[in-house]
Length: 210
Image (cartoon, rainbow, N blue to C red; front, side):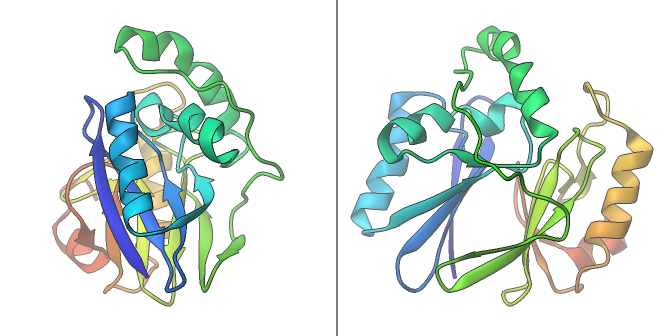
């Protein structure tokens, strides 16, 4: 498993490209918001001869989804996500225009992702865990063999996601972290939607919000 992190758009969102040993790849939360950012993503794919197979979303906030139409145009890939994320994406058009971010129009892939589901691609597999509180439909992706989790905007280094946005709820968010993330092996590496990586052990010990 290889992980390449891009940082895109004015929100400094982390877009992750995960590849297996055979060059098959998935992208988590494509946040590229203009042609230049998208070209840097495509250049990396082409340079390393990677075959993009899936697009998956942790949630539907505009800084995590602004690249969806680029990918559908060039790769015919529709996003895999939780069903509740669709309503959030529909609300993002007006929000995105305020920040100059494109609002996607692509129809999501179905069936939707569900809590506990195992997804396979290439030689890798990951588990979907439902983690609302920052936003309805928020999910994280845990790779048990590699002990890696992609947490979107639920858990950050020394911080947690906002709960004051529409569909946010602090108590629900805290429960998601305690039940769905802190139950992971302590050595699990956390790759968040913004900022640097951390570990479950470090956040259990040091996160002031938990």
